[in-house]
Length: 385
Length: 190
Image (cartoon, rainbow over all chains, first blue to last red; front, side, top):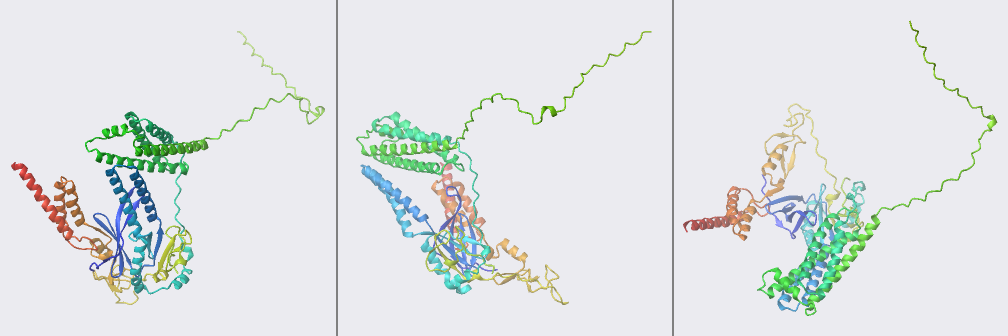
């Protein structure tokens, strides 16, 4: 039987994901290898490989489609780096600045590397019987490079085809074969009770108020209440995100829940950084309660970074809470069934003269006189004797 | 012509106007910049399968699977005569369907292999990852050794064949097993 051919690795490495963006059921490393007469697609997991061969004589087309994922990653990384750099300016402590700078540098490096790799794309390879995505060719530059390698090999197996000839022959392709785009069945929307949202937005308002109060009051009980409210926000937010799926909630309200989760993530991230800086500054303080007492004892007017933090949190929480409450109120108002006001009861019609008969009374036959029903005579008493 | 058209992966619009353009051009449906390289196979008519001929002359060999049909080639796996219908050509070899199936199941036809379990990688993982927590290696290092001995003869990576992972896993797991034996002996003697 035939021996396995020698393969040469083609540039590019990607991940084939199965499942949704949040829950990836299986992630497999995908790579392309060049064989003698075919292209080998290898999808590898930790302990197995799935193989697909595309013979040069069978490859019909390679389609490279530009995507925006690289640009999106750049925007997100730039935002994170900017936020952390902004925080660096508010921290006076050198150790804290260094820690924040390291975090900002991490985001910056990711941004730089992603920019250097260039724009992203998705590549498909088509044969007569299938169309396969090639996850390893997810950068435009790599896809072009691989195409430059493959083109002469495929042309040596099939012959050459100029652009003009290809376009001229494209017109002859049977239009009847064009399959309509797969349309996902829209999920059936159900009305949302909005109980989690009803709690979430007031909690955000309370959080805004508490942060506003914390500017003027520095006490441990207030800090504990703030922590409890934040915990409540996280719990209700998770519930709201779960319950709002496939409901008729307006898109704005749903998007707001996602904005709030981003806000909470930033909040937790900043809290983690501040806590880490504090732990580095005060190595003797071992537990979180001690750190909390320390922060609660700080006067915001003496520590500008604390003042700025409270003010920003107050504004953000209040804006989110108010926006959410308004949107939810609108939704509830729109959802209420329209109550029809019943028309006022009409006054009883006044007694009117009897309607004239259509036929003259003289022409009517005389009324039939029904003879009175006479009870039958009682039976004669039997004769004695 | 029975070729299937080349369409956009997102909007399924036909991309005939973009064939073999030098640069990215917007898709006519969704306006996403797209590059389409097409090859002559796209316009090739599909090959119709050969029809088996009925035996008309006395003395002609018949197919093993269809005795009424004329044999055209012997199977290179088992030697049975095959008609044009039963002849499966694979990498210039003529095989009957049963030899093809057996070869695929037993992994003898490498060009039909589409899945491979990498026991060498599993053994190496079992020999290295538990070292991070130390204690799990009590169980995992003997398991790694078992995998090495059990699957030593089986092929490893399809594109990078070799025994290096097995060897490395065997050495690491062996050292761990020796270390644990020494540790437990030390505890027992002490």
